[in-house]
Image (tube, rainbow, N blue to C red; front, side):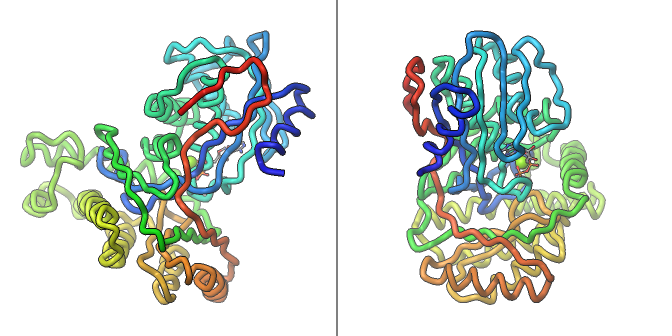
Length: 395
Ligand code: ADP
Ligand code: MG
């Protein structure tokens, strides 16, 4: 039985009716780390792990959300949605409901059944997957057409304000706009994006270090604050600056004296990373893999030494990966301080890569990693419907 049918069966058992099932994927960022909140460039792809949401409208104003992952239900009403979450998993779906309501959408009460297979908290954005799938489902169930960029922005608002995590737009955007076999190069200022076909022989292999250091959330906000602090300091030299996106490497080196040593390194990561995103996009545009290795290595090094968001386990995972056959490039991915690495691996070598990296990482670090061989997948979509009174939504 496929996932959608399984979910419809579970939905029926819990809520007693038919439903429509929507899906939105997690993501992996190929390159462009911490550049999104600096209005720069990122290059993520949606992956084959998703959050599925079954939804059926109710005749009252209630919102009932159930998560299969947490085996727990929560009930509220549209009128009782406060502007701030309470620190539970349901902040994610209800935050989206709140953001949609704030944006002026008139929506109906609903029974909502959530089941995800994006690993939670591993840096593959299970949060964006649950937000986007819920948002897509709520809008569609009320008969609204879905504008994907608007939905991404509202999901980001939910995470920023309702959940209280100051994430950029990347995760929600690619969960909405992802395309099978392709990565997206997103300009996080204009929200324009290019769809780039990934070389056919390349698999996206994600290696989970299985560690998540405590620093993670706090240091993310510290890095954001450091970038924001650097912008006014550079504005005498670069009057048009609005964010680090507006600075070139040359301008940065010429004005090193305006910044502390730490701030200079933080800026150098952002500015050089933006340049690397452009270069990787160029390679994909031309269907090339030569040159990927150096750009991925430089990105990892920049995060390790300049942005200081790597850790022993991520460095070990990357180092082990670069010793394997069939690898086009490897780096840590996501916010840092644990989580995953992303590796471009030749399709034929991927299973061997998986076996060897797993064994070598375990003997070096003492933890058995999860290693996923992925392909770029499709963004949010309607998967299946058995509910009779729901409008059919097209992409
Ligand atoms: P990541 O996005 O890297 O997976 P986050 O900490 O940003 O990690 O988001 C993970 C949180 O999102 C979970 O702890 C949970 O609160 C919520 N979440 C994600 N998927 C689900 C799900 N299927 N059911 C309930 N909550 C979920
Ligand atoms: Mg997240």
